[in-house]
Image 1 (tube, rainbow, N blue to C red):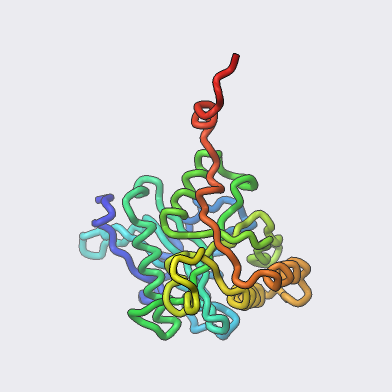
Image 2: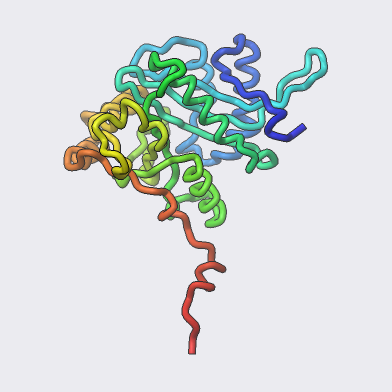
Length: 278
């Protein structure tokens, strides 16, 4: 096996509890953990297991772990998780967050990330009460290219290029991620992204055809308040949240920019672009 067409995609939330927990743990240890080595931006698996098992009370989100699994065709054989997309629906703001997207190295560049995001959007649309229709605006995060502590410039470029191909755009919001758990710090080296295709439909009402991509500042602030409160942070006492709120108040709508401009130029390409010397 190993080809993308041989992988089954499904939502762990819909699995029976024993399989759900075992497959979630396997994804966490084998695929997610190596992809997100920084503890400041990595969630704990116990958080996922808890949220997958309950219908949360807002502001806590409804969590989904969409996975791609190689199926062992033997009787009683177990799945081997090769990729996953973790996403959350926030009922109060009606927004969604794609928290993590991870694909094992040997099955990359086969369209898996796109398939995972599309299935995630379908699941989130059902959460929003629009099954088969346009889902909620999908936010995401990624590390700033000049602040990544665990990647080479080549890896940074590959990550941003992959996100750009998936349709993600970035905002210039001075974004600060709230602490993801006890003992974890807030993180100021992240970009807040928006999945461009998720802006279609109700999110784009009133937008002129061909207008630059943008999102409502009210929606961004409402989502951020949900996100902060879901993690136990108090947004009204957070200097970072208040700074973001002031920034948003001065921009209606919030412009969204292509990620391509942030992709580092490879050293060889930079040298090739230099004028001749002498």
